[in-house]
Amino acid sequence: MSQADTYDFLFKIVLIGDSGVGKSNILSRFTRGDFNLESKSTIGVDFGARTVQVEDGKMIKAQIWDTAGQERYRAITAAYYRGAVGALLLYDITQQGTFESVSRWLSEVREHADSNIIIMLVGNKSDLRHLRAIPTEDGKNFAEENGLMFIETSALDSTNVDVAFTDLLTEIYKVVTNYMPKEGGKDELKAGGASISITPTPQDKPAGSGCC
Image (cartoon, rainbow, N blue to C red):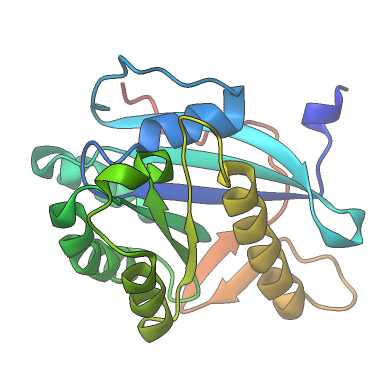
């Protein structure tokens, strides 16, 4: 078994935000270490995975879903919130409209996902600081007012991409371990009336994910 197949927990993470904010490149930068300037809008759902080490030496496998931002595909992506324990909510720091959409995306994820989902607000494209339209403080203030984590990233030059995912996974791990029984080895976190899988599964891709 390779190191990539060895992990203590499996967490499902969803990427949300308007089309064009850089969700696909954040995914590819974190999971494959690459960036594609010619990347096209995701249709439906893309998928990636990577295993990282958090505190206590635990290995966490992140199963990451890139949900399409276009309005016409949102009905498809709604089902993919199910079972997610974390979300990165992205906006483009150079596009005011994408920041204005954050409230709507936040309402949607809180409607469809488990009530205990951990959400990080991400101001992406920090490399385009000369075109910045949303001050960092605006992002921080929104995150603080809504109980979100916050960070600014650049998928292009990889700034804070690993940090964003690792910090989110670490926070999820802390929450999950607080819910876990001290003994007995249950494999589900019961929260908000839903069951969230928090242990490894034999397959990377859940059943019914044969989309695009």
